[in-house]
Length: 401
Image (cartoon, rainbow, N blue to C red):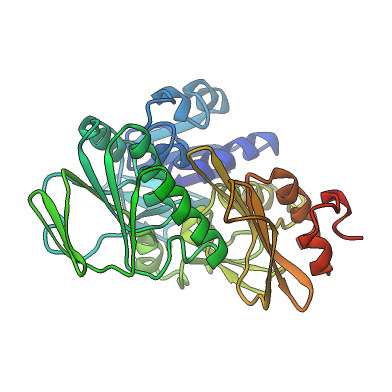
């Protein structure tokens, strides 16, 4: 019997899975079901170059339509999955159509987190997760208009940077004491607050938003003019299908080292998963392109019986103005943060996070060499001398010495 794979979700993880299945010699049938009407596309550029008008629509696509045609992939886009019938090995669509599978892969991704805020459903209030979201927002972008960004995370600050460059008057409201607090340390947060203020953005931290009203946002520190409001409150993994099907779900859909769920016929990949990471000795829910691509490769190898790719150190990035932030590893549990360069002047430095001398993570601001070297050092559980890390006379390649 010919093996049939059904993939639910049409993001970068799904596109990588298909490419890897082709590379690994899979000869069965593949059906891709996605609820958006688009081919799998890249999400990171949405808040950056696509919003800024520097990247055309077709360049968002991970692969062109011809790739899926050549691969023999059946595309069912703009289609919603209502249920997984594990007993009969079938996916049930919203219109009742049943798609049988021998292997099911959930690549359902995540969605923008909503907030129970009075006025959050008003016209002129936006979230940013999909192409449609950005198209709606682009239509409202105009020099001189006032934009209030609720949330000082990566998406909110990336969008603030684009808006400032387009001469909007931008205010960022962050409830926490510092911006990007979940992803970086205090040194990096302070740098980004300075960076945005230098670019004309009004950054407010420790501020709680109480309501969105016509023309302004009401906060604990007063009222802020707002022609447009962008809510950047993070993302939620789409785990409902998995949970309703009785699969094990925690912070995401629980998968093993081969991306298998608690049902051996079902895999899960990308932003919707939580997977044990041996390097950090705990389960991780990672929302990143790198993780999506790696899990796509892992699942394809497991399905086709190929060797599973080696586990890699997770990494992330953010582009704001002329600054590229590259983050590698996870800093949780560090007992020392060592700064290389001057975060209070200029726009280039790195912060190394150590635990008992062992390197856990690095935040590199316009410091590609430190970022690249640190990938290997973290994988090796390298122990480093803080004095050598601080000393920029020590070449990056010699940091381990």
